[in-house]
Length: 401
Image (cartoon, rainbow, N blue to C red; front, side, top):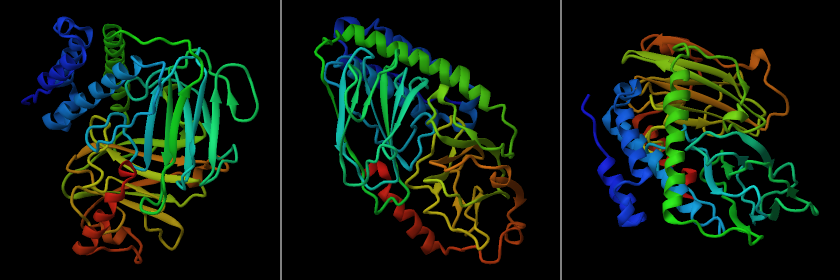
């Protein structure tokens, strides 16, 4: 496989951020070069292709550069977002609007804003900057449980002495706050506004070379976590089988109170997978696909995800998704964007109780010729024009809000 290099462009960007005298031998530059060499020989590169591999590398380095910038200003933290739609590591969910900030577990903070109308807003306290390192979920704050509703102004205090409502201790080892805004109706629901202020005056600015070492450490941690740890493990999942839902792994940055399913698919041009699951009473329910790097393909130009609001529900109260490389003409088609092998991920957030066995999703591998006979007669069909309209609605994806 011919390897597409992105290292030169990334190193040029690093040289602009780090003083020129230190750029040539900066630990961050060395970490970038090592990452690129490693990814070129990884088994996932063969399935993903050189362009997606380069995008994946660039996304990891972009997150490390965010660490570089935020670590220089621990005295003035801010929530930062990545608004790209390609190569976002960690299977970013298109239904979520993510923003994150570095913090110190010795600091005192005020998070404030106005609650939007989207279905869920949660704050996770992590011991690593999100995505770069998976991190452990040290605590989760669900604003719904605090009685904060759409349109409400709110204040949440972290760290320092206990006082009043909406105060939470900062667990030892806290390094980051991840804000997760979850949407179901992309076109109608509004986002929340979020700001963070540091109230104590204990943090000084960090020198660029020290920030570069911090960013390099995070990039090396990302390589260990994802490419040497998580990806080889999920590569062992059985193909075209669905395990039972389980509580998300909070020790790997998963959201507390969420149940999820991770599975692996493999399809040829004449095959389709039918995923059947009940429409639940969770606050949020969705499914998405990922490429061999566990990265969501371009989710504006391809219907790589569907949430409960977007999916057609059959008369028996069940949702039937169809994964196939070519368009089968059904509304609930999940488009793998040309990847014949990859991953699928299902989420249930805000369940009133854990899912029971009969509510677990099922899977069936069929040929495209067999597909119509395996679906209910009322299955919603789409013409080419209707498919184009369905895809046009994805332009309102939450990252654009």
